[in-house]
Length: 391
Image (cartoon, rainbow, N blue to C red):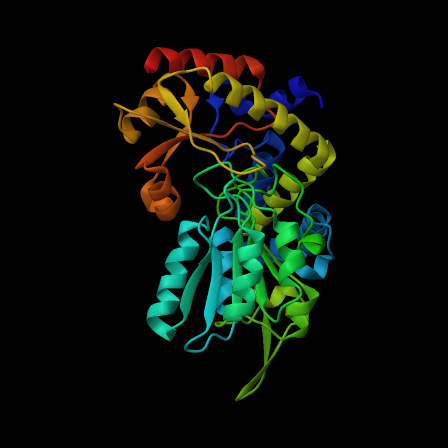
């Protein structure tokens, strides 16, 4: 990849070192310009009118997202964010009292909150699969609990928000497909930094966001819905007139494809920007992006490992571009603020985002540093120098 050109495409690189791509990445100029141009057209011509005129451009989102996930365009829905995608899928599952949700100890915090809400409302039971000694899901325990509990749903987060752990989602899917259950995969942090093959995972649903490693806008997400889930007639609990046709006083007919999970009112400017973000990534090649990310994260982890006053906190046989470490004698808000003043964007994550993981690690919070392919080795060096002086 031509890193110099990519950085020219990324105007924010002129001002800051951005190591918070797990929060929201810097958008390429072409993405921001696409959004601005759409809004200007709406300003001049009207929102409905622009959407009608440029319907073909909007349809390109589904083709681009399908290429990203190695699936068909009819399996893709546009949403407002990853949690929106996840909850639409979750609402489609007909839970009954006593049903079991089987999940990992490293699922996304919003997902756990949704499970607890379902537990309060419907009396479902939440069961976690234990971790292997290396940190990821224990596949033997997964198989055992699938047989024991016969869960209505299995939920797995590919990469948690609080560490660089990568779950073996394809191996997990190979086990789950032998059982009568729904597999919901949260790919919020993995899309854009590594290749995610929807069909290979055997997932029934995959939720994702555009703002993180895909380098798209905030307020945009996507949902993959498998052929199996569509054939089962799964649909969101509160289906919209976008997703269904009102056929008589007491009936409606849902759409045959994943668009049944969409709403009529959509931020089309963000949808156009999302299409450009995915196209930008695909033009670089996700394999090239993943290799570059592995290089940068490897350098950063190696440098951090040499600093005695911090402790790396990432587990797992495979790790990604989210790097977390703990440091004593500081508070998280001050750390974020002080590094921003130094021109470096990082983030911190607290125990409220990782109750089980941080309890096991014996920490209350961690620093989260998440480079992406447009970052440079020189930026890593500056971050390390700043951190050494800070601790």
